[in-house]
Image 1 (cartoon, rainbow, N blue to C red):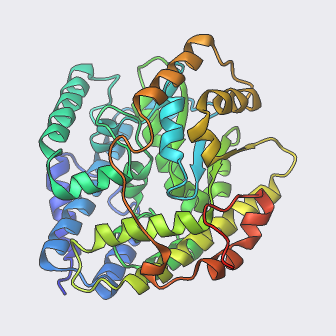
Image 2: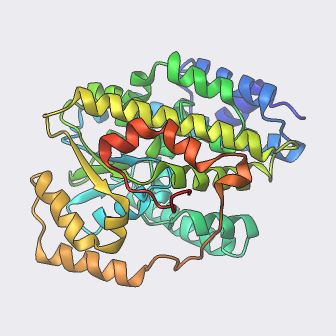
Length: 392
């Protein structure tokens, strides 16, 4: 097992940022917690430690740059982020597919993959630099297409360098990203994130990056996607009182199996001890926490119309109809052009286009019936259909 040197990590990030950090203590406690949990629990190989150091240093460098731009141009904080839409739901429940459908409406503003990778200089301040970063991202994706790990991930997660991306690249900067639990075995970190990390300040930074990205550009309505938003719904609402939420629903037993498979893929390349049964238990607890927080928030918001609920399979089978229903629920206009574009995208991107992968819950030491009973509080509330045959 190889440890991450946090001092070297911070120095690497400061050097990469190339600007002075106006808030050197920002989210540092979160970083210390994550690194401590990785070092104590993740069993990283030397390659895994180097990879983790690079990932965390890159996230810190981006946070430094975002803070610097906001300090140099305080008017960025005056940008209005009006009525943002948060797309969320269980990991592996079709949130990415749904995001690509929303992207067919030119009136919506998405976080682009290349923007998440390199948000600075702000696109509206230096369009030429933004175009260069976008072109570099496209070229990098082309070079990586034949990498075995990249190809396996592509089967599980739809992504394009100029396509819409989830918010992990922003929340990574605050070191309060529950998605770290997929990459590394960090149960202590995940528990502390749920119980003690101050998530509202993390979403205030999330809002700041949205303000930076839209600064000096035509304002459009943000559509923001990340399954891990489920752990922070009240905090999001505190930062964005006019936010709306669109939640996809899928059989959590099947979603758990898919999560365990993805986690196994990510960890086996960086850790010296990858136990499928431990992965199964960790992912089961993670999904349980997500479901519990969603149900609690939905109960608290009953009758407000703030949440719109969508069935995963219906989105895949009939996206034009489902998107029209969602737009109606959000008081948005579904124009003929947008509906036609949604249909065209679906025909060009049928299920399985980028490959498929097999997974089974039993591979991770879990019993489908027992898991369904544990998650019954969610399944019953939202009448979620099972994707597996009943056990006799």
